[in-house]
Length: 67
Image (cartoon, rainbow, N blue to C red; front, side, top):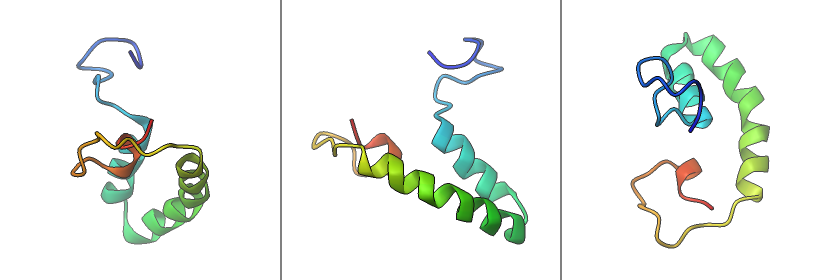
């Protein structure tokens, strides 16, 4: 469980990377580009330490298809 456990406050599907993606989509373009520039190296590090799950749903975002 993530967060406080209260669904209305901290949804159970509130993966940290999903929250970042939602923020990127909701920001003005210039701010979004700046945040993306800062997030990209972290994404690359996370991805490099993740093993692809062969049973993962390919329609899921990349951060949910690893183990």
